[in-house]
Amino acid sequence: MIRSGNPALKESTFLDPGSGAIVRGDQGTMTLNGTVNKTGMLLLMAVATATFAWSQVSTPAGIVGAAPYMWGGAIGGLVLALVTVFKKEWAPVTAPMYALVEGLFLGAVSAMFNHLYEGIVMQAVLLTFGTLFALLFAYRSGLIRATENFKLGVAAATGGIMLVYLASIVLGLFGIDIPMIHESGLVGIGFSLVVVVIAALNLVLDFDFIESGVEQGAPRYMEWYGAFGLMVTLVWLYVEFLRLLAKLQSRD
Image 1 (cartoon, rainbow, N blue to C red):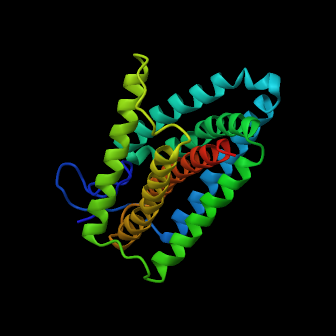
Image 2 (image 1 turned 90 degrees about the horizontal axis):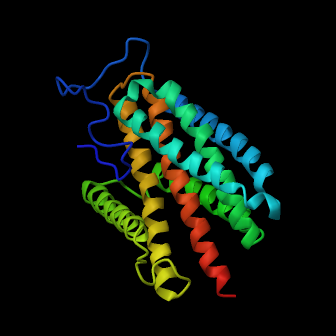
């Protein structure tokens, strides 16, 4: 059984809803190199729009206008992510759209964090890609194995974190904050460290899931879907690194 903490990459992704059988591609099958190449393309698209958003809001005066890019990118990215999850055969179109829109969100958020803590963005970028390549090496070399218990534990932890964030958003609408976890105290930093670790471990599940799709001969459009799922995890990991670094620097 395939399991992933990433909601975009779940165990039924490669199955036909009607028959429950593996979906086969008429136009070729999913390959690892194809998925890697498409992941790179999505990252470049996100960097392009992030650079544009950054250039628009990176000045002290421009920070005031960051909200449209941030919320527009976040909401647009969420809508496109949901569409991609439920209509995965549309991934060749919706995945690039997601990357472009999410880039606007990332550019605006990065500019805001960098305005408060100069240099924090480069640190978060290096940590994100350093984590990606370190875990990829560990996975490919067999140092980390995505066993069923490992998958179940990471998926459960990811679900718990999502529930905490959802509760935080809902309570925030009523002016109520969950104490300590969003602050720069030891509890807040500890919480962010845990979230970063869980987000990073989701990369291992993503690697395993994509490899399983390749082995099962999933249709070629699933290369875009696999790249999209990996992109979702990388965005989450990057944002969590920003939050953790901001908490650490605010204590100086």
